[in-house]
Image 1 (tube, rainbow, N blue to C red):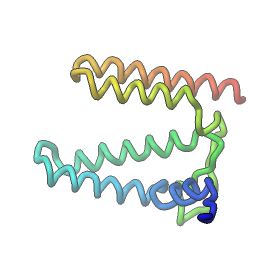
Image 2: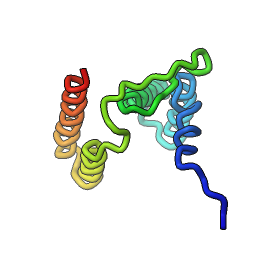
Image 3: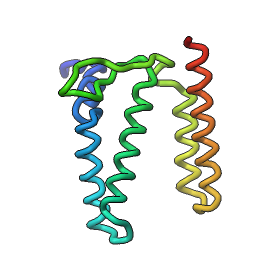
Image 4: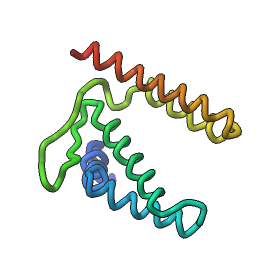
Length: 134
């Protein structure tokens, strides 16, 4: 029998360097560099900014469930977790999957309203959880 792997191992390792401000900064520069090499349409600085905002948004969303996050590591070992809902929240998963599918299959001018609607729905879910949690 192969050795059993603790299912928490993924989260313990996944939420290390990549889920810190240092990691988000490094990943933003790397992603912007890769996109710049393959496409000269945007300024590298603008791409770094987009990637950084996306990374910060990812960190903020990852702080919503009960599973802790250490975005200030290695400067601080303080765990951040708002505990608003379960990390496998089906509402978020389904909304995100529908949004990704619509963005991939619809032309940009049609996909954009669905993207905005999906973000508003998710924000509403967070707001409801926040007020129920208080």
